[in-house]
Image (tube, rainbow over all chains, first blue to last red; front, side):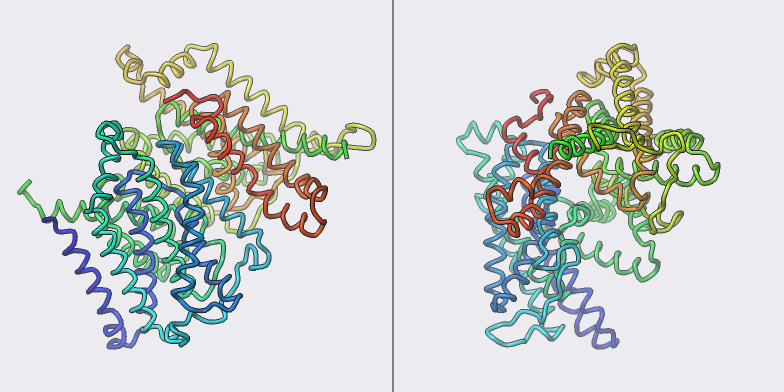
Length: 314
Length: 305
């Protein structure tokens, strides 16, 4: 079998070791960075389901991140602070938005699909920008993190990190099973040849829509966690550049491998933190690195790694 | 009310013309090279910044405009030569990623060179002031000049594409690229020219708008997304579609922002109408795009794929 599950498990274990390591060297901020990495890894995984396995390049995926984050703010204001209830609300909202926008977007292909998902993402963005009840453009701070069974366990950064990590492991495990099950095979089939899938009696649209909705729901859960991590909710979470960043994560890690999505999120968040600590103009360096990767290593970092590991064998 | 509507219609047309100038280059690059360029909005922003710099240095609006145009043309040529020609045969995803990277690099570069504070460009003496429109209504000369300049550019572009040999090759390249190459046309030089022309048009739009809007690092982002909406509504690759789409988007956006709340007040109470109008107005063009695409998945003037 492939090396992908091994790589993914290695990444999860590596992440799990961060809090003890942070405690050992006395730098609690490492745990915060690892939490961000894990949150974005969930979002990247959800995008990989449609982009990697369904070849649907969604350029509005950050909208679901934002929907999840706003679900936390809206629920908290109405007295619902339980994390799982908030996740449920976020997933429900994301499913509704994805079902409607997906039904329209999936009628188009290629460049048009990229553009229309971008447009739906912007629609969501502008909706929350003009929503003055929740701070409009500036967003709104959360009073506290979500609770678990009525207790404020997640206020502890380490406990919160392991909660996020558990969600990541669950998302990875679930998606890994899904893409290797019949559903995933059909989705991959529609990516390779829509005509053949039709010929053997499948309706690609249904599978694509189901994948699109599921992907949005998982990303919304990541949004719930992101809002809890920053304890802040703002429309900036759903800016189109954020959607671009999610695609960047995926492409850096390698598309359609799940483990690649996780690796890409880790590397991207890590690189951002590293460069941001080094210079306020970190985006310049980030862009240069990104450009170099695209121009010289088309399969992303995992492709580069694979080529290095394979050596002369292939 | 009718006067206000006329005024907003003119404002919308002016905005639409600007969108067309940016969209024209983007749709040509899309249609002929099948290439997604997320860095196109940055060229618009660059045009405005160069205009601000050159107008200040030379003390003349017109000299500044000329220099800004020449510089964006050169920037377009250099970018094509350095980056874009390596990406034409790559998947769309790689193009998205590379041009996203380029956008980060260029917009951060602009911030390093000129800072993040907004800049202002002085309006030329000749075009300041306003002329009477209807009744007591007056309209700024400069905005009319933008409309005229944009229409003239659109006419020039039409002439170039429909009436010249270069335009013929361009149209041929859009419908069948390998065939044009096989017939002995240097296709990579054609691409270079199209790309540089598109960059210059975007820069022209940025330079034109700089005396009316403040020049800031975020201006490229917002126009880029609207430009995408324009070319998707018009149909990717169609300059005619870009023109129609740009005017439609410009007018719907401008008129919707002013009249949305007014019209909503007719059916709901004022406070709710103001709130709903503020939420709905920025979403209007995206709703328009979704409606057009669900009716015609390839845009108004797009070829069926």
